[in-house]
Image (cartoon, rainbow, N blue to C red; front, side, top):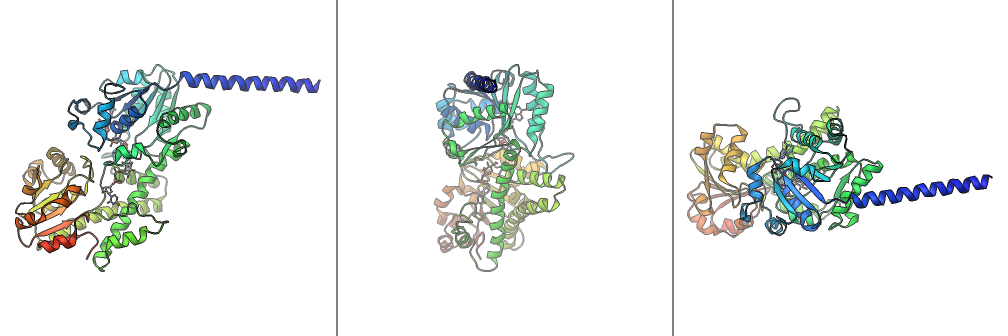
Amino acid sequence: MIVSFYKLKFQTDNLYLHNSIIAIFVLNFFMKIKNICCIGAGYVGGPTMAVIALKCPHIKITVVDINKERIDSWNDSNLEKLPVYEPGLADIVSQTRGKNLFFDVDIDSAIKNSEMIFIAVNTPTKTYGEGKGQAADLKYVEICARKIAEISTSDKIVVEKSTLPVRTAEAVKTILDKTGNGVNFEVLSNPEFLAEGTAINDLFKSDRVLIGGDQTESGMLAINKLVEIYENWIPREKIYTTNVWSSELSKLVANAFLAQRISSINSISALCEVTEADVEEVSKAIGMDSRIGSKFLKSSVGFGGSCFQKDILNLVYIAKSLGLNEVAEYWHQVIKINNYQKIRFAKNIMKSLFNTVSGKKISLLGWAFKKNTNDSRESAAIYIADYLIENGAEIHVYDPKVTYSRMLSDLNDLGTRTTVKNRESLFYHNTPLPACFKSHAIAVLTEWDEFKTYNWEEIFDNSIKPAKLFDGRNILDKKKIEAIGFEVYSIGKS
Ligand code: NAD
Ligand code: UGA
């Protein structure tokens, strides 16, 4: 009797297990992702979706944005006019656009027709109210969540691609569940680690893909769906799945660690300049230690970009809100050193020009926050130009990719002075020689490769003497340039 009971129970359990496996298999098969919507056609949404489209020709991807001008640029037949400049991107867009990659302003239809929705909207630092100047402004993310809830009539996997404070997924899920139409939403965190200028290569060969999700049966199924997409080109061992909170926090921490290395070496650059040590030699010497590693130890005029500062400030805000003041202060120092480095550089220019730049022409080579991008958000150039203009200088800029209107709006956004005054003090050149002609000092602020190949003899001949050159990226051959006659100031060299 007992034996037959166990036999029956075993058969029943087995049958249950068997049916569950079939159910998951069937569910998995029918729920294969065929349509993806990405909300936000910016520096992340555009390149990321272009690469997914290239690697997953079986998936239709629609990238949507409220900014019609941006969408029109993505659809421009002239690939030079894409809103994001990234080496290799235009080629991928030309292969995929109109086949399985679409750019559209019809957000509702794209949401409705997709099984998976990426949120890749901006999450800037708050400029108002509680948390002003530190916390991330999540209003765009919230608008997306409400829109998805309102429009969806079938189950969706919602993927946070934007960089978000830890525990944002909880808020997104609450909005979706409480205001939705009773459909099931799974929220995943899948932060992006690409760097601008190398985005395509980073997406092709990611060090890792991070996916965080609920550790429930439906959460695991959703994670698996996203894993399946990346598996089309990323080896499985590089796809790391975690809980949602670890994933959200890891993104902020990764950026904080990277920026911390730059601030660390930049702080040492100041020390090098007064001790006759050479920061490049110090970088190399410490980077040869495999425990330290050689990457992200390039001393510079200060880090820029839309994310490092914003994400660290957000980390500082979170730590402070949780009463972890020492933690907050520790990370805040990374930003303080970066601000110090930018202004130190500008002050050095002024000091070398006999303590006044009033009425003097200063040439800036480079406005982008790094080479190979047209992005100038938080670029050191903005702060250096601002300081010099405030002290009466005329700023003449050449950058291979950044437009005049962008430069002007960067300066206007700082709010230091009127637009008219900025326009009178900022001069744009679309070739380098006029930008440098008869100037009192030239400063290299972005590490564009072409700067290394200029005819520096000719530039010297046309400079006001003593000719001064400030290499904010240490990309020029100091000895060679000095031999021409320039007085050269390099970061972290006496
Ligand atoms: P971005 O400003 O270039 O693009 C964001 C886009 O979202 C804009 O075009 C904007 O119009 C659109 N948008 C805003 N609200 C919208 C809405 N409600 N509906 C539709 N579209 C909307 O920003 P980005 O640089 O692509 O960054 C996006 C996110 O990715 C941020 O959280 C950022 O921190 C993160 N991130 C950026 C990078 C990077 O290199 N830029 C790298 C990794 C992560
Ligand atoms: C950075 C991270 O590298 C990405 O992993 C991350 O996804 C991204 O932020 C983000 O979240 O937005 P990005 O800002 O595009 O990428 O470019 P980086 O190569 O990190 O450079 C950032 C700034 O640091 C640039 O101004 C660069 O010139 C400067 N930098 C970088 C240095 O001054 N020294 C270095 O050694 C490296």
